[in-house]
Image (cartoon, rainbow, N blue to C red; front, side):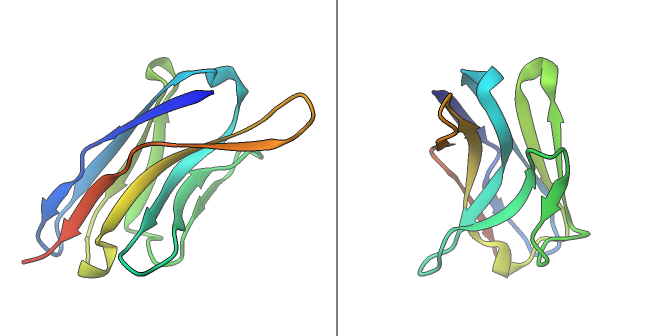
Length: 120
């Protein structure tokens, strides 16, 4: 199992920036992919940005050019740098780690979530 702890959310004005952090612990060696999702009130959880198992970085169209995902392997931490924030970015942001067991069954581990509110 992988434990994920997010930090860095808060209230920011439109056009502002925030950086989210996600520290991973536990069975880190088993992680296949890792990234960020978000869920706004009344909406489904959606992918924001991720490092895929194939070594790529994927971004939602709505955040491309504004958000950047990065990682520090020495600290087992993934970051989400968010710039030019819009009210539509308001959501709870969740860190996700995907892993597969010996039988190739997928497991998803989630952090507790951190609230990002973009408002004037």
